[in-house]
Length: 297
Length: 153
Image 1: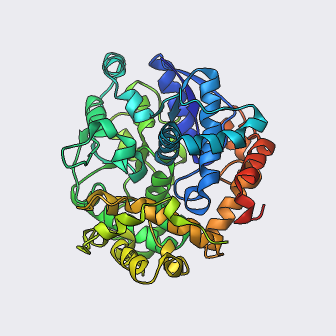
Image 2 (image 1 turned 90 degrees about the horizontal axis):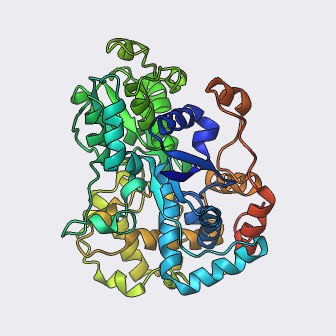
């Protein structure tokens, strides 16, 4: 199993701990990662809204790098997977857009052919063969009530993200993270408005306070269910919960802070890595006491 | 320069909307900010024309979460309409300053994040320094695609 690792921007620059955890976990599970000179994806929350053709062209360049290496793309972020999957789909279907993009890329000796697939680390870990390896290599359970937050762009719009798995009504509800974490001995716990946005794009582009008001609503529901930790698969969602709780707690101390983890950090801990190895030591909302309560150091 | 937004969104789809407001009822941005909301956006496109809608700065109060489209009983690709309207707005200078700064950063560095004490931070996690992005190539691609018509870099 071999992929081109698409780090994106927020993970290698703001949350390198997620990168470290992912590399260590993949190494343990026999998933080979290749680094290519990718740029920004670019995001569905910025470039796509401002200049659609630039969004297509830059994403196409990234896809071409993977095609040229003969590899599929493994992303670690809901935004990256959204842009790259959608652009891949658009350019495979539209001759005119593909021609236009290839005209832009030809100066740099790239040509989009549509031969690379795009996936997310959650879907890679959720494959039967990998789940089997995780179960075999797991050295400890993580018995915590965990609340999963998938991040909107990971699965919406489902006609683009999971076209083969739509219900009769054309809808799609992800379950992968809940299932995977239950294999780690965690207790995935449902909460009201689980599929509500984290608030990040609204906060980043226009009004930070309004963005955090959405985060706050989610946190209230998460707290109501006695959830001890939050699991995310996107660095923007992570920031919204981690930094967000620090900022929100300056206004009100009603809700105790709940630590947030990136998925591969939790998988790493279950596979025997230390809290420092997977980089949870730098999170703003500290998890030391919580992890010590289940004998993880 | 006017953007022909119907190249990006099928105009006939607007007439499928029967104003049930399920989209607006599920809009997280509208819950916390004075956004227009998808239902009213569609109505205004029909009644006033998309060029009027593209002038409204409230157009940017959106999470891009796509729940509106998810819940639309008429299966109107609302997210595509909103993307087309914002592309048109940006072309006329209606763009939040934080967003144009983000685009400028992306165009100048090839990445969407400002690197600060990066090597030290990566070393703390046992990682090598991050190679810089192929900025020249990225910029040439963005220029040829026409980004500098909208955001200077």
